[in-house]
Length: 296
Image (tube, rainbow, N blue to C red; front, side, top):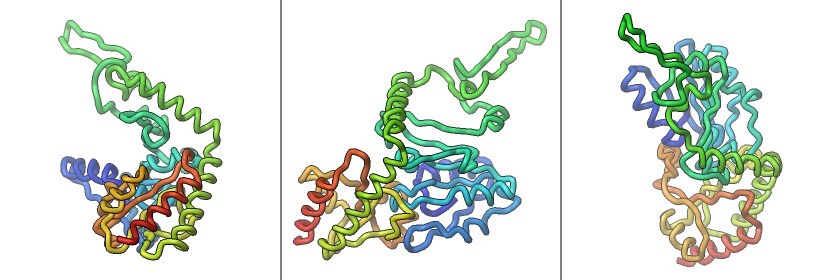
């Protein structure tokens, strides 16, 4: 794992490690928010069972080369889990090309509803895995042996083997509509548009805002449409509250990634993020308000 992970890709592993007794190793992150690949690869060994890594940082927007990490992991017979919550909605993602064993993403990050997401897994792995929940739908047959007075259970085929109970039917339908909508636009076009907005915002903010501090890498080829920033003398929460009064919504705080903020030596950060529904005119208005904030 890396120190740029969202807490959702840290806390569950820490909980399980205390139950199962395995050790978690965290790879370093450079001062500009990019992954220290040499340190990551040095921590993968023959003892490694699973490598877990975010495809895109939810704080800095840095795109990690998970294909490179997967190759190293597989050379040591380790499995690879990819957190795709910030990549699948914003860029083309090919699980076969990445050679990811597992990849998860969330619906509400990609124009879909909250409370639903998806987990991809290689078929041969899913077939050998035991289900983690029990209930209806995930069984193929349940039989009672009168001689032994025992019940025999045969699991259903994947993916139904992992779908215990009634699924989120409405959420599934809505998520599929969101996926179809984005695919019709083209994920390459989504990424291209986001990069245009990010480059425009970065250049304009740096030219107009004297107290502005941008965090993370300035190389736009390494990131997508996420911009962590700060205003000298103000907390991120003050900045967010001021912007909210003008109808401009950003995120403030740790963004559920406190270790990365420790690397940046920040108590918190403000974060602007762009998507297909944002425009250059909105960025112009955003920067106008930032200039007003700087007067305080």
